[in-house]
Length: 524
Image (cartoon, rainbow, N blue to C red; front, side, top):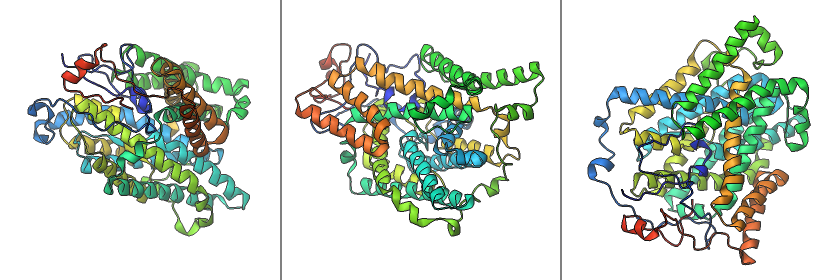
């Protein structure tokens, strides 16, 4: 059997929420005990570009045979992907707008996130070289947008801005930051600078991914407990009886889903099945106890929100005349950091797909696709996004060769927006909280604990140091400080990822002979 490489799924947070590892797949995850992968190199973690792939037969690798995918199969996998992606999009909306100020408006904000995901999918299905591509709002830029939103709310409140001005400034401001980032990515692709986006040491990115996990977990706890929590120093708010009662189901549910995914190797039915089970349990308990939905809302199990307007009013908060433009330049540093991290993150997504396909992809073209998608998303009131490599690989392995699947996925997502009822008024907070806890446990366990078995002690120290520095200094300065730790340890002579090779069942030479040329290292 041919040796094959698959990027370690711990690279990106989205691998667990719907990524599937087919039992019959010849690919093995890098995280298995017999494989190691290096984080960095002497050039600061730049991805090794000179790797070659043994090309499969033309019948297996040809991507333009869209007629070979039956329409019913496209419908089926669009529904499967939608069942996985949609709840995560709602959860991501609660992360961006986690500040207490947004709680009454959360239903509309979550709708904007879903619309943004649908827009991203339409662009990826149209422009990507991969007909099976799945692109959505993604976590890499999410934390930056959340930090921007929280900071802007504080600044606007300090100058006495009213709610209408705050909502206009935030919705238009975050959309503008997204569009600017998209334009930057287009320029990176146009001038063929993709390789320079990969210079950020990936051990630093590992610390950032662990921080994403922590941030998602904290946002989930705050959402469930109905508390405004901005950091560890405020975690004491979770330790009162009412808060513990509200967040316990979500914590248990998230950990249970994570355990189930681990035991079943990420089977595609686990996450949708678990989501349905959570809803069934909630309503069975309401029925047994004789509690109405209105009473559950009063008790805090369901978020109290203003009545959701018709879908045509989803963009009503975006009022240019109400924007306080003077506060938007205050986020320039965070904007630059977001461009750098999202560029690297997108490159890693492309690398994951490329290795799974065993054929080279044009990084610059794919980055331009990501950039255009973010421009369109920003212009339509949306947020940052990129390839969701786990769902893309799932669609590839499922034999999807038609762009129809992606268009149908967008359609099904938009259907939830135009429904005449507010579905969020019937979904308990712990439903979203459990998904955020799943992301939290997955990323933190993978990047703070399991990663220690795959990298050198020095690399592990960089990961842990970056995670702590992000807690202390915030996102943009924490990443810079993490790079500083990496440079210092490298100058002191510690092995932060030099001359590591990927072991494929103990025989690197066998990998080379089977069509995979591995350089001195391959950073993922």
